[in-house]
Image 1 (cartoon, rainbow, N blue to C red):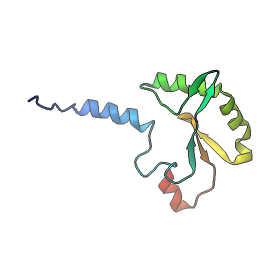
Image 2 (cartoon, rainbow, N blue to C red; image 1 turned 45 degrees about the vertical axis):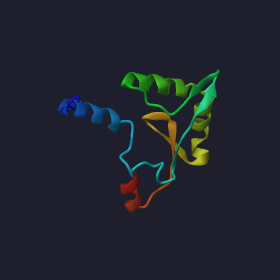
Image 3 (cartoon, rainbow, N blue to C red; image 1 turned 180 degrees about the vertical axis):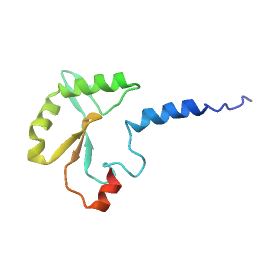
Length: 109
């Protein structure tokens, strides 16, 4: 029987650093509070989905593709009209831009 190996503290640090910039901690996502949505669309036969990739380069490349899409341009042009805002880490992720009570701000940020 093979013995399980501990990945080591450096591997854990790398994983936490990777995930921390892409995912909210459980219970702290604006999706959980009903004020966020991730969009998907088809652009020129290519499906754009809410994905972060496996590296920062992947994330940057994916955001650039999204920012060229008709849906992203429409969302950006109409964000004030619908009270929505994009989060910086994902061009596909939009939040309802509502003023929250101080207690609620702690829960969703």
